[in-house]
Length: 451
Image 1 (spheres, rainbow, N blue to C red):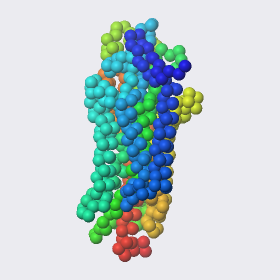
Image 2: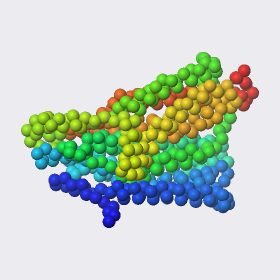
Image 3: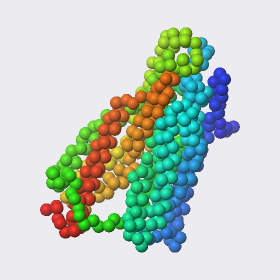
Image 4: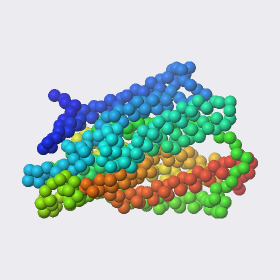
């Protein structure tokens, strides 16, 4: 018989979680719902064009994706995101490390309950940032889009330009709703790394329906807002060259921008394979926080429990593990998580770097940068290396509030490499796009800077 829930027991508490089969079924229904909404939008565009907005407004299929993403936001906030538990069993006595977070029996949290837990237990910074990313950013996006479409055809040219910046602003911030999602994926790997048969440390962990809903919201809202065309910009009369073109000329700007791709790709490769996040256990602090007999310290030292919990995770190892869990356990959520890390963090960042390098070599083309720059513009907004880095940094910083309770998340060298890679990514994008905009603007007004 199929049961949607299962119970994980400790000596004194029971935590109720969803079964893998239930989560898989809901995940599949989510995908069917998204496809149905998108199909309905395509049908309206093709068969019922009179029902579309037209006039530069988003098409029905774009609106359908945006609406479906916000419908998934609500369960993404209120249903279970994840279930995590670390307990140590020594001579039949259990040490539940989540008890110090006022969650005896394990963490079984939605986005809303996670914020409440963080505020209740001293993780105020983490709670504020989750509210900012998961709740404030989606509201801001929807507000800006609404005003952008209302003002799109205003007779007031100032409002039309405000509409343009509303749409552009949404496209810039859209992906920033989900940095913590990436941290939850890494934590899943860290917990499962020491949860092995026969081990005295138990770390059952799973991502739940809320994770899928919120991740889908982030991806769909980002893609759909990129398909919304902002109103055209007013032609500026005075055009100042970007500093790179001003001091090195167009050819110098071209090759200076191009060479950035080599350190960027080297840092990206190292950051993907090197550990980027780790978890540590301090036995003294753990025993004190749980009110245990200090004599337990010797038992924990002799069993090398701290060494067992000493785990690290790299992007590459996490992606391979997620793919394995999807293939062997058929965890659909693990498949989604692998796509989030592998495609949106890794592959799209790599492709954007290559597109920017090709665009740099085509700064003297017409239009400047060619199709490569157009691709780079889209890839820049959907590649999520920056969001990933921020998510891990925020999680580790917020975790410092619990350092005195025995469990610590730390930043590893791989994350610093990815941070530097993303810095070069931003620099390369801004250099190439600003140079291309200058060349195109000068060409439009009759000053050929390409000769």
